Amino acid sequence: MKIKKWAIVTLSNDGMDLAERLVKQLEDKDCTIYTKEKYAREKTEIIESDISAFMGSIMEDFDIICCIMATGIVVRALAPILEHKSKDPGILVMDARGDYVISLLSGHLGGANDAARLVAKRLGAKAVITTGTDVKGTMAVDVLAEKIQCTIDDFTDAKDITALILNGEAIGLINQGNVDLNDLILPGNIELLSDNSHIKKYAGVIITSRELEKTSLKIPSVKLVPKKLVLGVGCRRDTPGKKIILAIQSTLASIKISDKGIKAFATIGLKEQEPGIQEACDYFKAKKVIIPDEMVQMVQSRFEASDFVFQTTGLYAVSEPCGYIASGFGTCLLEKQKLNGITLSVWIEEN
Image (cartoon, rainbow, N blue to C red; front, side, top):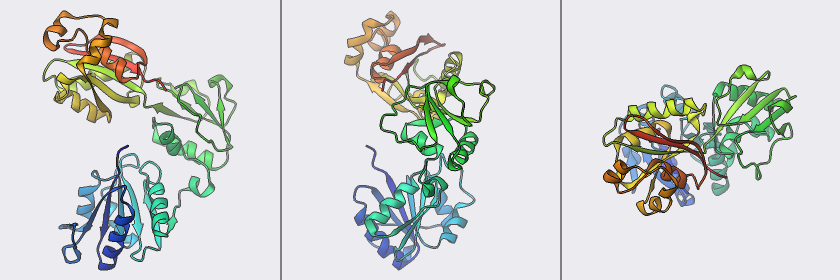
């Protein structure tokens, strides 16, 4: 499991005392303390710019930013640089005595609510959480999506459905994406249904990798896309990333599958440093999985062989065996496609 990176930012001596105490309680996290030079101590990073510019410089580097200072300072510093709750880190604010820890921003998707509870438990503080679904003990759409490893297709739809959940409206949940829901405890007003035809509810949550036309549903709804797609990929050396990205988009569009469900790209060691593949990983926020040649050799007989590929890689196939293995021997949604020096195959990971 990835160790979360925390930044602890303070502008006072009292704040430094609390920051050092907090770091000791967060030994399972990767913590960095930041402060102005006049308050700096051992193992402290220096804030050399104004607080707004500094916050902007670290937003992409940390999962959680805990600010030990007045809430007003934090709000004014962050206001010009915030993007969206799906991108911003979780932001906490603490008073210098450590009595309270406020989940200020990105409570659900950014993890600030859980982080506030964690800090409160370890320091004996009081967590201040104001998100409506948490206050009422129910579940927001973004929390549901995170728990079942899905991506929200449209955040406006998600906001609308969360409001209905919060108001106690009846919601139908359709699991077309075959996501594992066994350990999920749903609020009482969300009912798991078998398919769209059974929706007689006020609103719906549809889990699917397929593209849906909103006009096909007569109810307010939000689509959650399972992060279960694995693409086997091969390409000629120095193929531009933009070309690979466009090939992926057109390939998935041809089978009406959302690219928001891409979890990983799988390829061989020879292509590990291929810049175009890395660019595609970054664009789709997907991990890159490298399949050892010996594993490819064990399964390549299942797929169409290529003498040209063998001459350049020593393997008879790349895209399909890599996708097959990386998906946990999953289901093939689209066999190898040859696209001007790029080969792609599409797989869905098994539960």
